Length: 249
Length: 309
Image 1 (cartoon, rainbow over the protein chains, first blue to last red):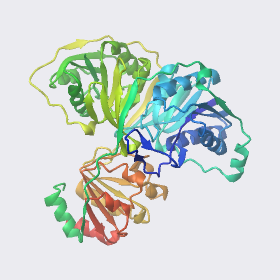
Image 2: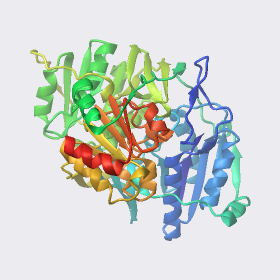
Image 3: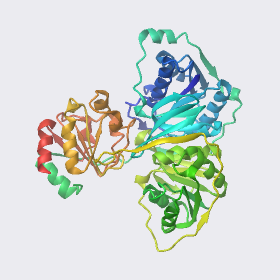
Image 4: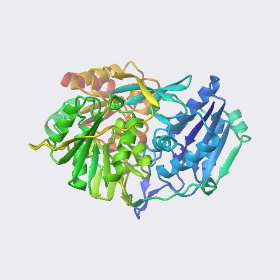
């Protein structure tokens, strides 16, 4: 069984992004970039299924700039068999990314597609669900565990106030939440080996997908700063402030 | 211009996030329809009809809507979609699950986690876990928006009753089924919706000392969270993680204990109303976002705090 994992190059989660002075966007010049944490989890899950003998091939795919090849190399070093980059400099909406991924799904015919539940830059939480809609597949979002069982995949979903286990008919799409697994670090020998694994670069136009967008970002601004707080010198002073000033306890 | 709001409910009770979503809808326009899709859920439809601002309730009942499976609900909403200028749902795990599926079926883009309505086509939403706010204009023929419930006050119940129209369910192939559902049985409130959250970081040094937080939490009726550092160190399981890659919380009171204040943690809690930081390192960045900072040894201060409450 073939598994496709869609991954995204995003700013490293430890970086505090700043808004550009002209409010056109956030300033990512020279910022450290990385695999989106949820995509890393998605990838780890696919690799584990392959290690258990339940998958024959893991394909890592990404839509992004030429530099996203770095993240795909990381994916290959973690254990993906091959990678495909749909190269574009444009910041595409989730719908457009889903349309491109749908074209790759048509070409590769994976039985299972795993993505991160959301990317930590745009925080859209849309691509997996949209791809499921376009492909006409079942979806299991916010997965904290998954198990292949015959023609189905059993997915434990993290939902508000509890969990829900669904059985999805294959082919299906699963989006990874934080608890699904703890991704491995790529070892040095695997990083060396990854350099020889196939990484195909495609132009989105080659897939014949029309990309249009109805969205226009007018402004990106910094959130209101919190007013400076105060130091209290004792537990008693703290409790007093919480009771009588903030009135929260 | 008619707006469709998708009600969230469990077939018996309306989820309060629907009320917040209705307030957002009222800021866009005045003709508001609410879809109640479920199984044996007339009671929910009757309750929705009494919420002020609702002009029409659409009730669609089918066993396939009993558990809000995205595949079924999305095809029903997509069938109704072309009659509406806007489709709104709460940005809960349920709404986040089906709404992008609706948008893709209608071939329109979605705006997630809207926190402010500036005009019928212009909205504010957080990006980078709230480290920036984007103002986005959309000319999509149908504007699909998920609404962050904490950003809008709940709509009130009025003394009118909107008409309820029955809708045939949409026949959808059964691609998925629910095997089991569990509600977390903890006596403590849910981390995402608790009024008070107490979180621990690496300063707690081991999982045993989280007991100090639990005792304090029980006294305050609070939920317990943790920083990624504490999760990575194995002190607690990662469902407790507050931060950019964990849960985003905005309680009335957030108490950060032994948490240095890494960016990714702050991103998950900085919208809390009041933030208290307890840390022995007076240079810790957490103090920059704290309303009240207390410098000292948490192993002395926590028991003292518990006694003082």
